[in-house]
Structures are given as structure tokens and as C-alpha cells.
Image (cartoon, rainbow, N blue to C red):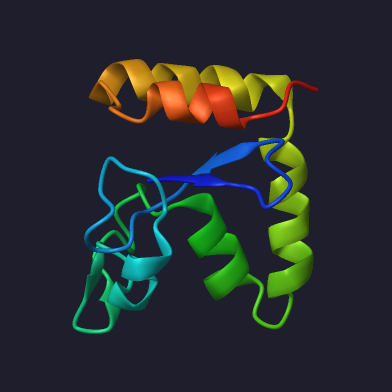
Length: 107
């Protein structure tokens, strides 16, 4: 799913809440947990496809979650991250592309 920063200056691709797959991160689905969560465990764990934020912020660096999230946020603010989001938008034929591009402030 695509999350938009509260400041509307960058987006983040992340594992979706169940119900938000290939969509924006919608608050109404935030209590549905991650779409990859199975029996209270990550279904991607150990596959090599576990999302970086989950792996580093929630498993490898216990207690450093906030610092880890802030460090990853810096990466998502880089221009190359917008290129990745553009590729994702094209790959999945994201229906919210026009909304995303109108929302995100240039900078």
C-alpha cells in the first residue's frame, strides 16, 4: 500500500493492512493488521522478502523502533524513492495515481 506523510511531502510503500492492498493506507483498515500476518507471525519471515522496516525496526533492533522509523523516513524522502513509487504505480496500474500526484508537494 502507499502511505502519504502527514506533511504531504513524501510517500512510503509498505505492506498493506488487510483491505488496503494496492491502495492508499486507509485509517479505516488500520486495525486489520498486516496482510502478511498469519497466526500472529509474519508470513514473509525468513523468505528474504520481509520488508526492511519490519525486519530492522521490529525484529533486529528491539527498542529502537522510533529511531529506526525516522532513519527509514530519510530514505523515503530521497528522489530515488519517488522513482520507486512511480514504478510501483505503473506496475500495479494504481488507480489512485492522479490523487497521489496531486497530493504530494514538490520538494
